[in-house]
Picture: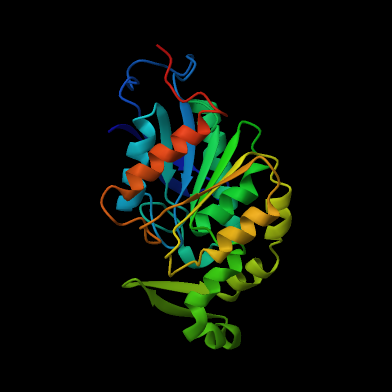
Length: 268
């Protein structure tokens, strides 16, 4: 894929590493800051403790750019190639990172017409969408109905965090440091209201055999959300869409669904 590497400052002064994947008909040399960006833009939020470079994220992006959608994927503060300290972040700071990246895209290219979130990123895009007027559609992939679902990962050290204020734990072979502020922030989130008041067309995607975030979460999201809403079962997929071809297929499905709500072909 053609792409543009980006370094996006967030409100806390951290540089967020990002890339804007471009459809084949859109060349980085074909437009300037004074031009109208020649493609619809989707903003992608990665899964809990993941990064923009997860293979599934790249393949999902390929499926979208093949249908004419530019995709911006970035690393949340303290993850991947982005600056900042992960232990100082919260679910709410992930949401403000989305705001800051969307504002940058609006200034430099085009405001994102679609938000796509994988796992906890799905919960984050639901909360962010209402504050982003350019957004016309929202997609969740394997998302929890309540972001507090991620606390299951902290079960072995939960007591230590609550008594000592912080602790480290290994997730998928990598060590992460968590503080009580992360838990406290999740407790303050009213995700039900965010889903109910989304005010955007919503596509809920989930794998029936997801053993990280059960498909019951998709049912809860779909039940709470108001129309227009759609559901696609990702038959045969796992939580991370790790099987060959599954993520790209998912991207193509998203682009087809979103074509009703956004311009999915670059301008000639």
